[in-house]
Image (cartoon, rainbow, N blue to C red):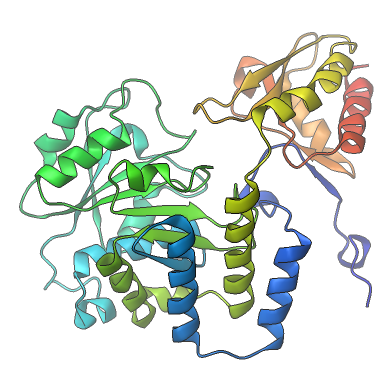
Length: 364
């Protein structure tokens, strides 16, 4: 059997936008594919597979326990449902019951963002109620404390380039507030590359995307306190049933984490070296000024940033880059300022040459 773009009448895609859900996020390795194949060809006691892969990952990541879920978004919803339900089987079946009195999830206002869906939608799906703390451009530990009541179930912190970066309390500061008030702290670190630092900073549950930095199949990971992880597993009897993950992806993702812990990801130094000839080529194109920039959230990720001048706007250039096959997808967060960024983590030299050629055609 042959699988191809043509079989399904699809365009080839060059992913210069980063690990984005709309493009399938990332590529997986042969190791991961082999683990997925083993999962697909065998049967398991699924509850035991969940527990044992969780224990294996917990040992790798030096945490009390871990649970593989279907996505980071599912991790948010199930973590909220777990914490408001506090381990009750009844509450797992009925997360929206009036019998649950503590539903408030405190979130810095600048963290209530849309990352493809609004954060508050995932909180509400888990039965929680978002309470915003601070302001769009500022949130301090005191702002969090102001919002704590006897209906508060947890504090949620979103570590992402989508959120407001300036004048925001750190994870460690949020953890200190949570600890002082005997509340759990959830950190959504979906695209983050460090699998250790947020637990070390004091978070009780940390959520990662399986297919972003880790480069696994579609999956999510929740790590942290054993009791809370057990409460999350209980959600399989409730909202987690609609978010279940298959045996092939559980095993593929577990292998991806093992490989990631062993090998890490591409360094910023390597990215900068690969970017150098690409940027030089881009700067030969009329009405384009190119340079290397670091990720806005401070991660060790470097991208090519181009300033579009002349008759065409950045938004028009983005539209034309996507129009043909291969469709070239870029980062467009600053398009209104005339800036387009190219994330090369999943782009090889041949593809960079195709991007340069297409831009020459568009700008000429």
